[in-house]
Length: 119
Image (tube, rainbow, N blue to C red):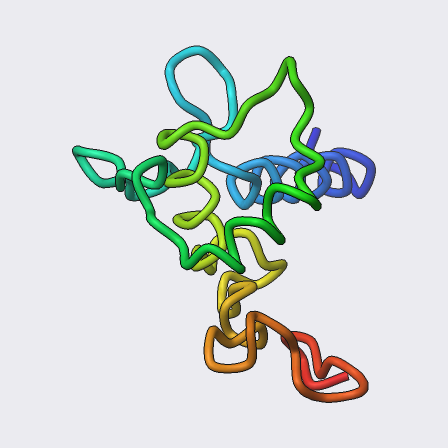
């Protein structure tokens, strides 16, 4: 009763079950479990930063913020958290801040980026 065809089907079924268990974990709704950014309880107060007059004039002259989408403290705080979040990289090991250093005005000071795998 147990022939070669049944053995192949059984192995195929076992392989499918094994691959299914290796896929992304899902929550009770069936959606992939999300990595939640570690946001501070109180966002940083970006709106009360006082710049020197020459910097304030340059910022005002070059402001391209859309009128319908103003910068908020919550949005700026989220942006800062995401900038330092390694979970956004392909292998969860490198963030934007890994290369774009504050000491270099947030630029990557090399001609070509190495990437997470050195390529």
